[in-house]
Length: 186
Length: 292
Image (cartoon, rainbow over all chains, first blue to last red):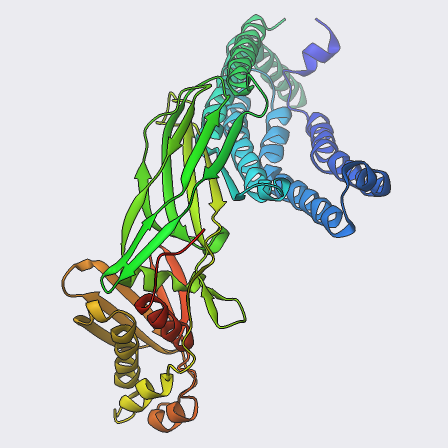
């Protein structure tokens, strides 16, 4: 067994911190960098899509708002992910946090996409039309997608089933070693 | 290798990808544009002392989506966007993919409902009151596993009907105010003022039950039309600048503007000034068939 596979059966702070850093980068830093880049290229985007300054500002502000809401709403997912990564494969704590993370991820997806859809004014795209107002109702669709996402609950369950035996063996070995050490000390 | 974990990942990935591909395919339109909406003909409005009779324009809808629209409803209302107040809704059933349907609705709108919706009315600056009617088209798409319809689309189509009558500038709101200055408390005073405005605006519905409650910010009036009971009831909060000590005196000073009356009905609030109520009363009284 490799060292990495071996480490999976031990709780690890380093693994948890790595997950935290990756999460902040993926959910906050990269999206913000993309919006900053978008704003940097605003002149060419405005001429390409025929937008004025006010409309462009509106879109940029909307993007910032969505990223912020997505990050704040995603904080529980991130923290559960950190806890999930901290615990050893085969432990009941990892199973619990794995299931919670998947459930909260599905809720996060529903919340963020529904918020983004409701923030987006489709009406502004249909200037030459008798249609003055457009509303897209997609809550039920998001619920269905959320349910599909819940299928991923089977992954931490499978991981628990596959790693439980090895985890218990490692735990027993460590306890035996500690017992022996305490006997020698005494 | 953790075989149960790998198997679980494979199953979850397969289910997710399959489901998302099926959903995506259901939304890719067969022709562009996926959905067309247009109006033909005219929207006509007639009125008498009991209410408005409104006939919608013909709405032409064509769907090029891969699945049928499961439901089609057309609402008729005043205003648009967040200030839209729906007067009536009619159901037109399903619309098959690739088919065109022509739908037309007519509705009788009780005068008190039209009065409540007057918050959406505008003045064009030339003494004409403008009642901006909208048609609200609601379609349900894709029968779902969970609910009747997974995706709904709502369109508001603005009509060209903008002028339905003119404001009589000789209408004297002061008359109503003078008629109620003898009251001793602000709640009674405003209750009577509101009743006077409504009686003038809706002479066919003057038989009202009126309950007046004083609140911290003003006076709330709950109005129930006796002939239809709670099916047609409205609460309004009046927040004029009148002190409790001498309401009559201050009301006389501001008699050209009674303050704002806010109607709450159907989950929405509508503001009605005395001037608007007076304008509406005149408009409704002298309303003729509107032209698109």
